Length: 638
Picture 1 (cartoon, rainbow, N blue to C red):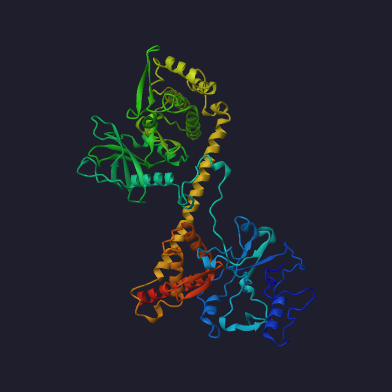
Picture 2: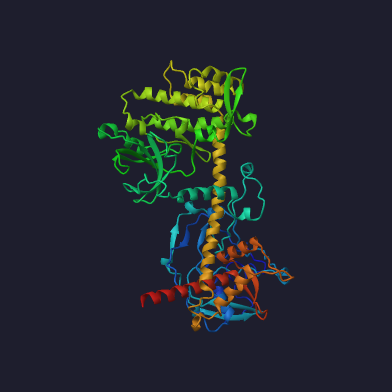
């Protein structure tokens, strides 16, 4: 296998079959000895050399990074900056297939007209696997080409730097130039209907504005605080919880319960506190024997119970407090579909029946604003939660519109376990689970008719008629099964009635997960570039080191300053600022990767022009940052 310039990947010039490595070179030349020694020690990947992919593979062991030794005085300044013998790791072939890999420099792109026809140099041969001191390099010119190589040695490489890997584990293992190109996630075909076409270039580089605003609003909900003067009845601390903020109206008379957001001093997490006013537990052992079972129950559609505070005196009474996980900006089904502020009433004089419908909602959505597809999604998620509860030998007992919350598109059962503490009923668990199914059917009737109490006996005939006229027979069968009190039933029996709709909901959830993972990968790359910018700006133009000769803006830091102007201070032919986010992101990615692509950097005065590759710039940045860290450590230890 040869490169574009006729060099083999083993580091020597191209040789024909059967020719010696040093043909055309003097017998006493060090370059001839080096090429011959390299041919004996390392395999050649020429076209005539067979490769045994099943042979045991040797990979260098992990070594502690050491600062590079000083450059040799025999070469000029730019050669010193370019020479850096870095051990190249061997990457399994199955990992390389995970993303695009470039074994040479990417195509050169420049915003300067003079550099548009510049072609990068071919990739240099990979360096040896073991670090060699700089003083062992030798320089020799042959045919107008200058070669840098280390002393040839007949001694085998140290065995402690290698370990054997089973060929069955990693498959094919190849050498790379140490360059890894970061790429954004590829758009998936099934995600197009969940994410619209971006309106600007920034939407392809950063998180979508809708998701950003959603997360920002949730963060603001975490940061909300209450004015103690407006809520003097709220204590500053409740056990180890502090910074209580009411989540519902607390000014109602004869209120039996209230809900707060609070922070735990133990772990710093946010919790939702459900307070039961004036309830003193007389028999803690009997009334709280099911609390531990609720704490162990973990399900994606159930708000987990974390702690129960008995006979709390922080509110100047005997309160019972339940601590749950806090989900910011979550709303109940009652608020989402039956809020009087968002709905208007319609009266049907023919049937003497009043229904509610959100303002501006199309007729196809149904009276409560929930179409049948949305109702089926609710059914599947609530059924999944009840299935987990009943399988644990428990019963929800608090299944109503005010205790089912919507967190994004996810439905969660909240305040579970409260009824078991307040009313430790001796009713058989099977009967309590049947009551859960009856309440489940009531919720479906309320959502389908748009009336919260449509399941009442006096209103149910009219509600059933409305459902028969507007919804499918499968939904009617589910409601009839849940309201059937004549037979013993379980939550698992509604699965055949759900049928293929379950796969539709699962497909939507998986597509949503793909979208969120794509957004997360964007922010992961942005965080990497932020760390790179922080490192570069920490090194450049430090005022406190301006008087030190070692920190003058020359050498490494001078080239970093030119690179900063190349990235951020581009101008057009008319002298106007060139604002190109793609250019900035691309240059920073190449610097972080340390590619071999070369760029032309020009000083602000125009008197200095430097052609340099990203790999050298990366070494300059790392060297300058290590020097800065070393000076900082010296000052600390003084």
